[in-house]
Length: 239
Image (tube, rainbow, N blue to C red):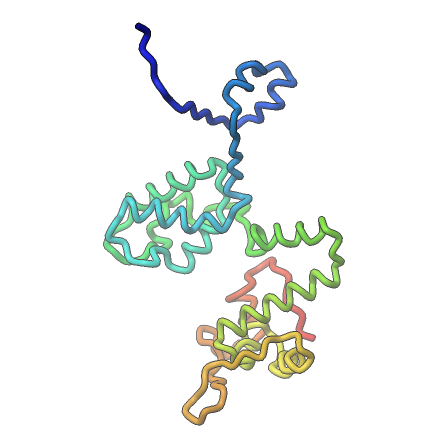
């Protein structure tokens, strides 16, 4: 009596099989036997938001005692902006190389990166606007949104992010954005800025606080370029 078995066949490929059938490089009868259900996994460059969770998973599986979050800000920015031609395997290999160099349970710093992976040694590195931001702009252009509306939305998004990061303080947000507090107040009066209250001081008034540390004596515009934009990024409007 012949033996019977039940199994599930899972096939994976990095080639478009439909194109292979048309070109004669793949048998159509085999394709229709195995292609009962298909799942296309986009490359990492099309799902940038998945990079950090995957990197954290790979690294903490290699170093379970690692602190949370496992990366300092500089390494977080590097991992998020790095190109991954090998997709998830490339990212996993990078985490393995970092784990082999890292000592202790503290966060991963630039010193734990392999020499050839350090930002200063990687020409052609992506800048801050590439990735999710660039994809969002592309989507807007594809559906016919005009340049004026795209620019306004980008400014509104930047302002909302700065105000939220500073607990609702327009003064501190203005310092980061390189604009005047009056400009943000005018946007709030016009209804284009959320009026969510910020942190309050001992007198019950919104806390304005000192300008952000790390840029003593520099004008606001320069502070933004050094901390937020970096060289090569388009400046925000100061109007």
